[in-house]
Length: 143
Image: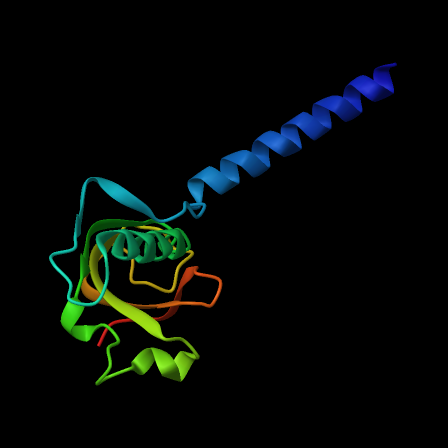
């Protein structure tokens, strides 16, 4: 009986040590939106408000992978979106494509490829619609 009690205490101590280590080493938290987050859609000659919201949701879902980052703004840019004269979405095997720009900050998380304690402006998101009707991010970054 004492042996089981000792093993239980050792396991509990080990579990607490691992938990403390994770918390003190900036365990990655998923990307999120700020309390004052804004989605700016404007008007579009190409896409409906519902299509723009669905594509924006794909960006926000993808952004969850940006550990320790907080998005403050996401803007749909109609003039960059795929259209009859510039169908960049065809390069990805799609007919429809949208471009978004976002602003976000990164905390002091160390488990990320982004610069800690930085602000990123005009981060570009290229989103296409597949045959199934789902929107997905196919390219993103600055520049």
